[in-house]
Amino acid sequence: MFDTRSPGSLVPIQGTHPTLGAWAYSAFVPDPLAGDAPSLSGSTYLAVGNARAALAALDSTTRQLPNPTLLRSPTLRQEAQSTSELEGTYSPLRDVLTADEDDPDTAELVEVLNYVRMANAGFDAIARGQGLSPAFLSELQGVLMRGSPLHAVSGRLRDTQVVIGVRSDADLTGMPIEAARFVPAPPGIALETGVSDLIAWMRADHSDRIDPVVAAAMSHYQFETLHPFRDGNGRLGRYLIVVQLLTSGVLSEPTLTVSPWFEARRAEYYDRLLRVSAAGDWDGFVSFFAEGLRSAADLTRRQMVALVAVQGELKDRLRGAGVRAETTHAVVDFAIANPSFTVRSVERALGLSYQRANKIIRQLVELDILMELDPTAYRRRFVAPRVIDLLTAR
Image 1: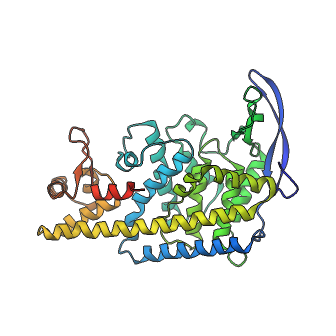
Image 2 (image 1 turned 120 degrees about the horizontal axis):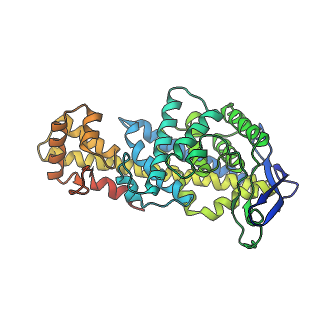
Image 3 (image 1 turned 90 degrees about the horizontal axis):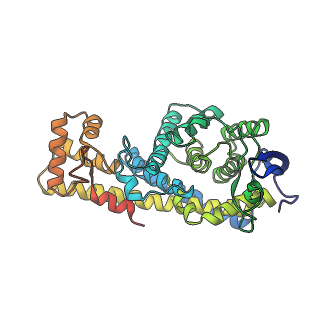
């Protein structure tokens, strides 16, 4: 399927299967990204323009909020659930939103909440001025895989050959590598050089030659095609989309949730990536990618506006009950920003005594603004039902 338009080369690889014996095959190594945008059609540039407009509208809405970081946590948990589901790790969104980050109930929740920890660590480091580097990427991947079966071999570039997917027409009785849908670069110099080149490309300023949406599409393709780690490449690669839009100035706050759109079109998403490798179909992939960003930005903006409306509604309910204490209103803000929480987390975040935080939460429960998740649990957790209902509405 690889023709002369392919932006890379097939290289020979070989190994030994424990029961089937020696094998020889080919892996795909992508060429370094170019300094100019690929040739794109007029309709694709229109899709890119629409994506930029939607991202600008999202960013404008974010900038108008009194506290733009308020909505980072709920949108990040949504992204964590959806991006993990794309990779085969499923936990219901309501469970993710209400999970105890310090003591997740299941292995799936551990993996999903690792994404939240990784994302926050990355955003905080970038805010402090840390730039992208291979070491930084490896560190983030190590956080993502913490507590997983591959934790011991994570936090560094892979040193083994991996394969991606299974072809629908594959002979499942033969060599597993021959059934693979795609075989990325072998470990070693080619992979290390490819990652270093990609990071250098992402850190360079292409704004005078490549639209930021096109640049994000190009680097996303390159990262997923290199597949530099044993696991977590899809989740980390989609996270880097938001990072790149943030560092290029397209977004001022990382509230964009990109994965739900790609998750709903999983087969086409993987096909579009493969068509770039096989036949250089940048136009089809960039058009698909831009439509995804446009839709994601529109959805995130609508949800952001709806969450702010819920915040106003809950505060109106407080005022209607004659409650005007600033600390009580601050707890409502905390409930918007944190889909589930404990008394201790309110105590720490707002600088209140445990008794004061507990009293306010009890008052908000009595007003039906908050609800206790499980009264029999040792560690009591609370949610604002209006917030959970909004976030889980599809």
